[in-house]
Length: 263
Image (cartoon, rainbow, N blue to C red; front, side, top):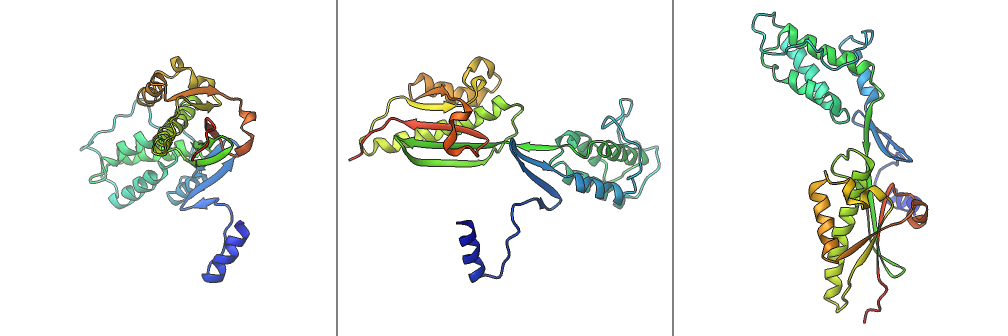
């Protein structure tokens, strides 16, 4: 089907297929078994080369412990254009490097009148980057499908809009999306005279099911917990290997409504 679609598009428009996305605007995209990994290692090397820091010594920390960054009116002023260029390049790097965001934003405060101490602090960030060029950002993918009997009536697969701190939280975010969709479908079926009681929601992560382990996820926890107490859904554990029908999804949550005959 993909080949037929490409052939049809090329017959109408002047275009070419580039295959699976691997590089876009300085961002390297690696689709691996456990999710999508975003990294800007090539951008880091280019940045070090641009500011002649490719041979610098690596720094273990982003900012020195004895470093105090302030207005520093007594120090010598540096080229503001060069400083702003460095800060702008580092700000773009924070797309996949959240670990440098604090230091970069701190240095960005002094772009109007940068001093030598500010430039040294920014170069310290480059030294830190040289030893951490392989650091990137994992993007969790949420997948849900809704079954009525053996018929697939709704499905969804997309990157999660927020960053999860650990696997249980990523699973709970996906379960929340599945719960919201199931409630919507439940109300839609009521218009056709079909009344559902508890809709079983199958989740392949026990930590996400056991609410005592996810108390810190306040809003998402309360959303699912309230619907469980109201009897709208019933969350059930299912082994990952049993999710055979859409095995390619990284986070699979299935809502399987009871089998009813619609008039």
